[in-house]
Image (cartoon, rainbow, N blue to C red; front, side):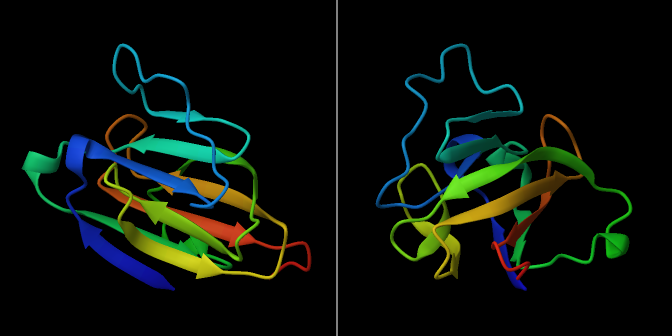
Length: 129
């Protein structure tokens, strides 16, 4: 498991392949929980000024270890570069997972629906890894 403690600028992190991910056209009216395109998930987090958040990225998260988390998003993201990355709004990679798969099934779990300060991102390839 890869884990980071960060205070993301603008209280936003993005999950995508940095070479091919397409961002939502506009975040008008602010971010309400999360937004997604077919290749990117934009996640709103707790206000950065309130301190760091904890984000874990894992191939098969043991969700039984996180009973307080709820599913925030589930879907499939394409991977063309060999890496799915979690980045901040300045495109700085916070944590990434390498893969040979062309797409990954993703579940994003959080401890709050609107301003989570703890996220677990589970990624699984077509072979169940």
